[in-house]
Image (cartoon, rainbow, N blue to C red; front, side, top):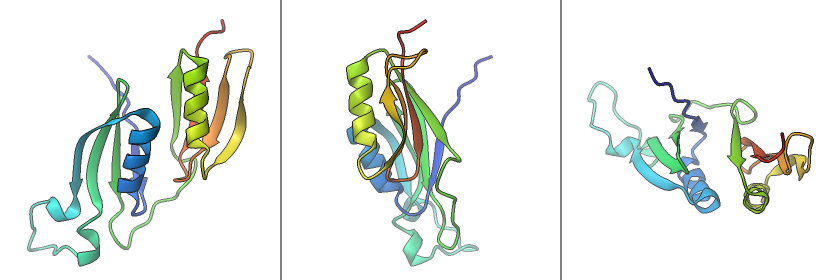
Length: 141
């Protein structure tokens, strides 16, 4: 039996912008992206005009890991913040530094990237979408 953890980010209308941002930061590949407007019509639940361009489901590949997204449906909201924390591991301090610097743009550093007893470069940053990342660099025992 195999088990895989896939982070799923619920966004408040800016999923497409977040996907593009993570494509640039991580070199991610978009595997699937569908708007509510591209879904089959359901006459019992007509789709409001403001929902048609929102992302109903998307998946990107970051390295070897999948990451999923959806916008909330109009009228619904999701709490932005630490409800999802993602740990990004790297074995290269330079790569970790670049990721950390890119994620902190218009975001908030919770713990500066630094040498710790368990990692040569570890830090915590919340990006401009309210998603908190732990940047962990492998290398210390």
